[in-house]
Length: 99
Ligand code: SF4
Ligand code: SF4
Image (cartoon, rainbow, N blue to C red; front, side, top):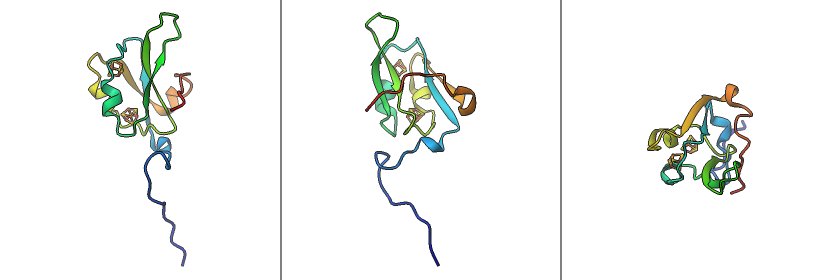
């Protein structure tokens, strides 16, 4: 009899993005404080430059690894992250950083 099992490993080896039913979407309210970066259990949030030419930073998530737990949105002091239904959110955030 064959037994199916997953090889143990960190999220660096095992992409956890397929678990997600809710997607965190960073918004313009981000003040780049770094709180969500520190709290994310998958370490999949990083800083990127805004596309508005201001030279300021904001956050972006690597959706291959974000499992949609919502911790980032809960911890953000200025409520700059919206949690959206995964299907509705597809295509909402063009920012996919290379970590
Ligand atoms: S929802 Fe936020 S805290 Fe949770 S894994 Fe995704 S980016 Fe990290
Ligand atoms: S916690 Fe909120 S304000 Fe701070 S970096 Fe994350 S999204 Fe931006």
